[in-house]
View (tube, rainbow, N blue to C red):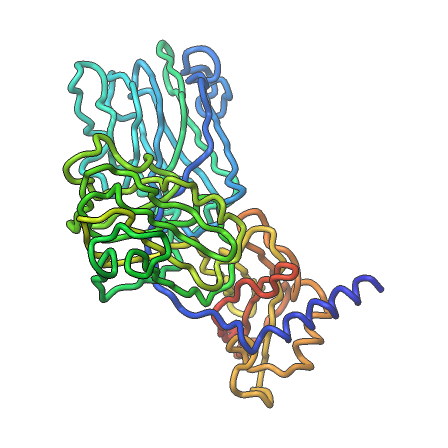
Length: 458
């Protein structure tokens, strides 16, 4: 009885929301997020490496795992960093694994040179790790290098879940220490922009009045039509603006009942310059940069007040940027305001390894552990040809019937935001299948929906 009540309540919620919650298609951009750390881990885990058994012997392996629990974003460009020392780099094979994908970062490179510092693997770096320079004789220069295998293999996966770093020490006689691991991911995000400016800062004159005075204060509001939960460090702001005497300005971002200062009368007499954009995200160095004089370089900075206060809020609705010019004699312009919020591209698809064989139904890249409902239409179109249910042409009675049948129509995604179901046995060829997947989260209702999927068995 409890199960029936739960299903009836959920389906009522689904039906109530379908008319107004078809998400808009927004473009993609990039922001960074941080990671977990492992400190003082020996390389290899025991001895000096090269013990019998090779990479099957745990004494030769250093394995570090960490779990992303707050971030659930779609990876578009992953960079990975190691703070590591070792007296013979050529002994090491270094791999990174996540959600069934393994990438080799280094594979016995750089022979007898030592490791000593922070090494970042980046597909867009200027040169390969295998060719790293040695400004200090015998030690590889810390810096950014391309990995042995491209990190783009992780593109499209959710950042959430377990990440595993494995370092295999192939030969004896040398050791080292893993001092820390980290990543800087660039993630496909929901992005809304306010372009086509500039707007004067302040709106009139050169500032200097009370906060809220329309001659000294103005605001710009962006509206996000998507529903979804903001993850840890999943929020970024990009501003392209110029202003003489940055210390005159208070710039604030507000959403719902939460407001955070991006800059609060910081920067002294230094100027903001319109040569590029100022990006703000919690993962980066604090604002303002030092020394506070001349021109403040365009770069990525942490806001003065952490954006973490927005974590777990629904991204849906109005986001307001307010700029207050507190002192006279200086002015400038806001040229661009962009808001970037991490959001998954939830998708549903099919797999059929051979003719008339098993058919797999795949939910991919959703919010980990969330509740899903897969709706299907098979054979002829129904009496509702306009795709009322998230683009799917299906009757209300079919929706209710499928939901109440339980698995595989409903269930929970795994820790990587995926769910897989295989229909075994004979699958007749030539059957057209149309479907859509939706994710639900309590009172938030439908928080994500996939694009309608179509498939014909063979």
